[in-house]
Image (tube, rainbow, N blue to C red; front, side):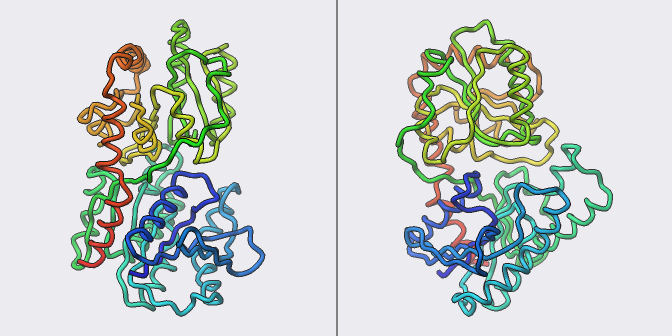
Length: 397
C-alpha cells in the first residue's frame, strides 16, 4: 500500500514520538509498503524538501514554528500548520499522488484538515494513532480549566476524531472515552500498543563508571522531565535513600522541570543523584547497559492512561522498572502480570521507598528478570505487529 504517514515529529528530533514514527515508517518499508512521511519543518527555506531515509520518502513541508515558543503563539502556529502544509504539499512533486491510506499520529491534535484533504482526494481510509488524550489530560493536571481555551481545543479534538475511520489507542482503559465516537457506523476503535524497533548497543557518551555513582545499583530515568511526569517524588525518594550507599539515581533528558529538579537535588546535598543532558536515541542502549532499574513517573492527577515510550525502551534494554503512576493505569497490570518491576499508585513516598529498597535487594538474585523484560518487548511492542495490525484494519473497514 502507498501510505501517507503524517506527524509533527520525526528525526533529527529526539523525542519518543519522532523515534516511533521513524521505526513505524521503516517497518512499513520492510513489509513491502510505500510510506511517505509528511512532516512540518520551520527551518527550511523552500516550500518543501524531499529526502530518503532507507527507502522511506520524507517530505518536509514548510510550516510555522511550534516548538520552544510562547503558549499562545504555539497554539496559533499549530492551528495554521495543516493548512500551510497542504498549500506547500501542492507545490511539491507529490501533489498528485493518490494514497491507499492515511495514517497520522496524535499529539498534535491539529492535523485533521490535512488528513481530510488527502482522504477526499484519494478516496481512501484513515487511521489515527492516539498517544494522549488532549485537552483532557491538561485539565486533569490543573494546567487548564474548562473555559474558552478548553472549548476551543475540544472543537479541534472532535474534528480530528471525525476525520478518522479507525482510532488506535494505547491501552484498554482509553476505549470508553471513544464510545460515542465508535457508535457511528463505519468507525472502528481498537488498542494499538506502542512500539519500538530493536536497537544495538553502540556505546554511550555517559560513563557511569566515571561518575559519582560508580559501583552502585543504578536507578535511571531517561526522557522528558516536565509537569506531566510528577518528578518531585523521585527527588524525595533519593533523599530517603541517601544513606543507602549502594543505590544511585541517574536522570538523563530535558524538559520544563529539569532546572528546578537539579537545583532541588543540589539544595538537599544529594550526592546520590546525577543529571545529564539529553543524549542521542542511538546512545540509549549503551546507557541502559550500565544501569539496573528504569524509572517510570506519571503525575497522579492523570485520569487518562498511557504507556510511556521510556517503558518500552527499558523493556527492550532488559531493565525492570520502578513505576510511580496514576491509580488504575493499565501499565500497573502489565508490570505486575509480567513480573518486570514494582508499581506505586498511591503517590506515597513511604510506599515508593519500600518498593525501591526491596526491589534493589531482589533483582541481584533474579537472574531471569532481564530476559522477561526483553520477551515482553518482543511480544507486545514490536513494530512488525503494529504495522500488520494497522494495515489489516485499514483494509477491513
